Length: 357
Image (cartoon, rainbow, N blue to C red; front, side, top):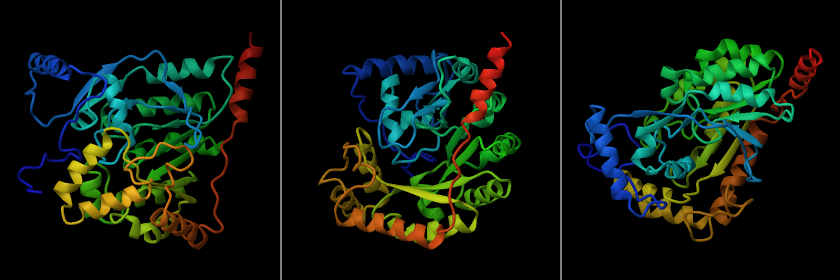
């Protein structure tokens, strides 16, 4: 790829057709007109923050192989620009592209903490861990400006409610005070995503994310402050980071992580087209090899939507990856375990509040 032609600081290098809109050119014209009215140059590589006002913030997760029952997202779209991100497809529901729009048009849920408080106060709500960043990173660059995630953590602490966080940003350390308070009652765990130990790989896979060094330091600081950390080796991409499984697990353990989890990359929906465009431009010498190996993990396709197999894959390459992860667990996490989150305090809190009436 010619560096002079690349869109700097972005993962995707194009916008793809939104499958929900046959007349997408009309939407694009409307968007360009909006940009001009707002004083923004329409083709400038700039992030636009758009305030949105959903009626609810906590989502029930229907997929049986995700490992969470409820999630919430402070933002839609993510400036991190991870080329493989499964959440890209969700941007199409908002009328945008899963490509560059996903990275440059970020929807901000300003009322998220208020909506969360409403949810936790409901008599019908049964306490269950809520995962922040089930879709997009709650500590992406927008959080530095809007502080929505911090506001939500204050609500979780107030109501003694368990919460889990998925992130790849060292900005989480800004909220160390709240995390420590939650950890005292076993109400928090953190899932830090690390896909490579190579900065060169990180820069092309995840252009606007925290450096690997800072992520490892973040794991260490969290762990030293009694906050349990699981490291997400996700996704594992054959011939890009699959050779790093053992070194990644070793580094995670040495910095205090209590466990690891992994997924094998699957390029669902529009992500297949975005990823193929990206890899032919950034890694032309091994593009065919990588794509064919991904396909070999998913029955000859870039994506597999079957519950139970889509995250782990099948075939020889997938089997090798899954066995390496098992070996890494035995080697580096044999005597470690993530504690279960405390579900009782919120119920006690609710019971105590109800007695007042």
